Amino acid sequence: MLATNQNYSILIADDDTPAREALRDIVEQEGYRTILASSGVEAVDLIQEVQVHLVLLDMHMPNLTGLETLHLVRQIHTMLPAILVTGDPTETVMRQAHQASVYSVIPKPVNRGMVLYTVMKALTRFYGRLKSGD
Image 1: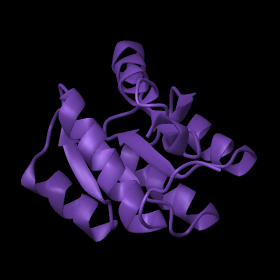
Image 2: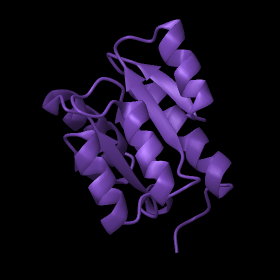
Image 3: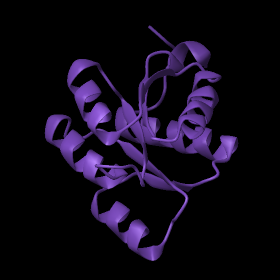
Image 4: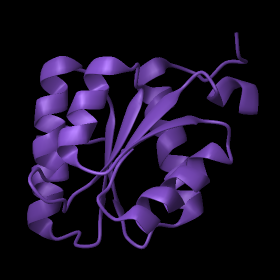
């Protein structure tokens, strides 16, 4: 499955370096390519420069929240699947995520199995059955 996963690039945007690196380590161990952003602004800039198949966005970042970042990203890449990561999964956040067509919300601290399962399900839903690599 690792060869298959190399076909997918995941943008991880989180202003908390240890959290960003933990997410990177989780998905890279499964063979996914990662692109890291330390802010929503950086994430939007990167989306314009590199091919991204999925975004993992921290909800609470300075300047642009994860949902504000997603709104701007979707102006560039309309159908890009997004997973929101938050230490504060309140009803309001969940409702806003649903309204923004976020695939899923993952609570912090993240669980490796939950992250991998959610990433795999999102990629399968948006890109079809994950096939062996080209």
